[in-house]
Amino acid sequence: MRESMPLNRYIRVSGAAMVGREVVMGKDDETGEPERRRRSGPVTGGGDARSAKQFRTRVKTARGRKYSSKLWLERQLNDPYVARARQDGYRSRAAYKLIELDDRFGLIKPGMRVADLGAAPGGWTQVALRRGAARVVGIDLAEIEPVAGSILIKLDFNGEDAGDALRTALNGPADLVISDLAPQATGHKSTDHLRIVALAEAATCFAFDVLKPGGDFVTKVFQGGATGDLLNQLKTGFRKVRHYKPPASRSESAETFLVATGFRAAASRDALKRT
Ligand SMILES: C[S@@+](CC[C@H](N)C(=O)[O-])C[C@H]1O[C@@H](n2cnc3c(N)ncnc32)[C@H](O)[C@@H]1O
Image 1 (cartoon, helix red, strand yellow):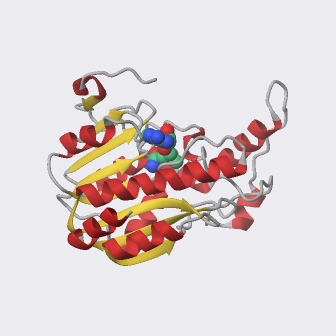
Image 2 (cartoon, protein in one colour; image 1 turned 90 degrees about the vertical axis):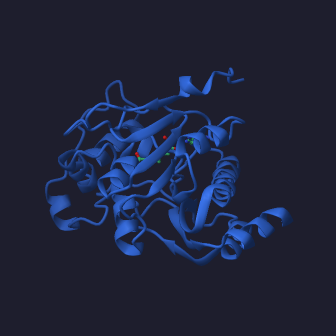
């Protein structure tokens, strides 16, 4: 069980300048994304497939390395989004998913208050700040290196203290809630599936609780998931709900995003009461 700690132990207001070209990349971006199939061929993530194939780097030796790790490493080395993230100083290739979502739906506006759920290693937080958000509060199970201008909370989003910690740090209603939450995959399909749906539902309840009228919400879901109830809830709570899989989301991943815009506060409270 998580030991209870005072709030100020969890919340760290980062004061350090953003590390220019720092790239903290690991499997974080991939965890919990159940893939419909694994493949060893080039994953271009929307880049030029032919040139990616031409210059594809292969990891020759599997010595001391599991085959799955060799494939992961090969995929990272050949992924144009990984290279772009390094160039642009983003901590994860996932940053481009939010960039593409924002380019498409115009979600982030200067001065906004944003909650970033499942924030580690910090790519989405960086994007929200670079695009003008005034206050970004991120939460994750994992420790996140400080990102200047953000408040990063190391806590289980499902834990009892998470809601209060986030609300305190937000210090007012949110304009935008973004959730890239993804549980560590267990490999057991139905267990993984239930955990993913539960996280998206918890993110939705939180969004209903903290969004200001007219606010927007983005959550990661997985295709083929039992998202019917979630969709109905969102349709009641928001003026528009759309599915979008940004090009940066790997085609072999079942991951996609629900984009709900125009929060209707009163209708949402009624919808929550009914569940
Ligand atoms: C795909 S990663 C997020 C990547 C991030 N958006 C970025 O741009 O760097 C998903 C994150 O969800 C986090 N996560 C999963 N379950 C969680 C939970 N119950 N509470 C907090 N974070 C959780 C994981 O630790 C992981 O860091």
